[in-house]
Structure formats: structure tokens, C-alpha cells
Amino acid sequence: MKAVRLQGYHRQPVVEEVPEPTVQGPLDVVVRIGGAGVCRTDLHIIEGQWAEAMHPTLPYTLGHENAGWVHEVGPAVTNVAVGDTVILHPTPTCGLCRACRAGDDMHCADSSFPGLSHDGGMAEYLLTSARACVKLDPRTRPQDVAALADAGITAYHAVRKAIPLLYPGTTCVVIGAGGLGHIGIQCLAALTAARVVVVDRNPDALKLAEQLGAQHTVVADGGQVAAVRELTGGRGAHVVLDFVAEQGAEQDGFAMTGEAGSYFVIGYGGTVHIPTLDIISTERNVVGNIVGTYTELDELMALAQGGRVTLHTRTYPLDAAVEAIADLDAGRVRGRAILVP
Image 1 (cartoon, rainbow, N blue to C red):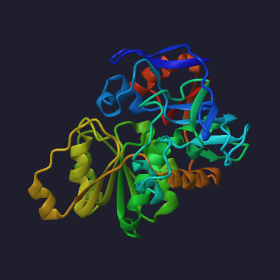
Image 2: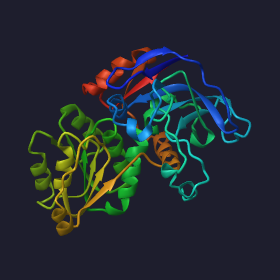
Image 3: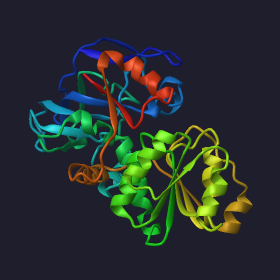
Image 4: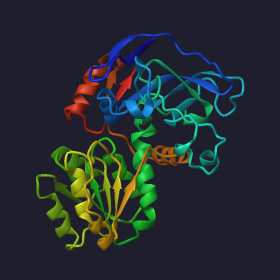
């Protein structure tokens, strides 16, 4: 089968032939991929930023946002059958540790991360676990939902955590209306009554944000912190969701957060520099976010299949993976890039 393989860090991946995966264990599931998302995390993987955390053995196949059809199942699999349409939670988990028992499976003591720790789904087939499979309406096209497996669940996870803070009358600032941010805006509109202010340097992204439910948009042209302060009567936002968190956005995000407010870091790549006095004197919170739980992905798919959350995508054939990665890196993709084998 064809797969998008990373041969070495700081080098573009290549599309090459590799053996098809097969079921090895009782709960294994092989999925025929119908859509694989291209994520900024893939750019960070290529740069080597995840090497120390995940220790993958090179070469390996990229791709951690995957959806498709069940191709083969192990003898103990009961929740899906061959032919079912599925989206895959990004981290197959054990189901037995305390985190899994508590429904906090993103912190499973024995999880794996296809596309980061070992072979992922930028390929024709992917080996995963029954515990990762969320069964979908058979009319669903995997390419339309694949990026919800990571970008979507990451945005939803952050919004869901912020819901108690976003009662009517509050303001939420969204930094970045790209691949994650445009999903976060829709989740805010579906789940909260907060006023949504979106900050982005791209006018087209801001136009999309308005269409998705943002009440105000701000161009990130150097005056974005002052503009947010003006929109909030000088107080700052109750919640800031930072889907960028690099190239200065991480400093803007904390500055846009009002007293007793919460700054949610969702994007990454930068470094937050905050004097401790600024934290204690204003009682502002800094909240980290990483992907989300299986239950949250199931909830998000209910919103998606009900038409409340829609991915804006640009599709590429698998052979054009390098082009898709270059377009994402250059900012030429509005929404999400999806590889379709």
C-alpha cells in the first residue's frame, strides 16, 4: 500500500510502498482510510519537536486524524464490524488504568499515538484498536470528518472545559480562526451564550469566523490587544482560547485575559513569559489543553452529524501529501487539509 513516510527530521516526507497492516491481537481493527487530516502538529513532527516525547522509530507513517471504513477485526471486537464507517480517537487506550476508568482516557497510562509514536493513517490502511473506533452514520464521508479526530476534539475539549466560565454576558476571545479555531468558534456557538471575539491576521479567516458565529473580529496587525481591551470596556476577556500560541500570540493571549479570567493554551510552539506577580495580583489562570477523551469525540460527532459543527476542508490525493504539507506551512489552507487515498 502507499503511505506518507517520514525518513528523517527536517526533511520532507515521501510517499512510498509499505506492507499492509494486519490484525495481530483480539481487539485490533484495520481501517481502510477514507480521509487523513494534515495538521500543524505534522509540521512540528517534521521539525523534530515530538521526537523526545514520543521516541518513534524512523522511518514511520504520519497521520493522526483518521476516518474510514472497518476492513478487518480481531476475534474479540464487538463494537464495530467490517464495512462500518468510523472515525478514530487519536490515542488507542488500555481501558484498565485509573485514568481510563475515570473517563480521562487521554491520560491513559498505556496509550499509543498513531502518527506520532508509530505508524499513522496517511496511508491506505491503518492498524488501530476497537477502543479507538467511533461508529458513524454509514452515509458519512470520512474525508468530511477526519480532522475532527484531532483538531475537532482538541477544540471541543477546550470549549467544554471553559463552559462553566462562559455564562451569559461573558466574552470569549478566540485567537486564530484556522484549522482548530474555526471548529472552536462553532463549538462556542453551539454550547455557550458567550460573546465571541475572533483575532486573526488573515482577513479571509475573519470572514469565515463571522459566518460561523463570531460577533466581533479583530485583525492581528499589532493593535489587537488594545482592540480587545476596547471591546471589553478595558477589562479583558473572561476566557481566551489561544489556537496559535506562538510567534507572539501567547503573550497577546495572556494580556487579553481579564482579572480572574482564564487563558487556555491550545496551540503550541511558543514560550509564555509571565511575571508571577501578574498571575497572583490578577488571579488569572493559565490552562493547558491536549486533544480530548473518547467521550468528547463521541459528543462532537453528535454535533457534527446534527449539522452544528462543519469542517471547512481542502482535499488532496495521497500522492500530493508533500504539496498539502507545504500549503499548510505557507498559510494557503483555509480550514483543514485532508488527504484522500
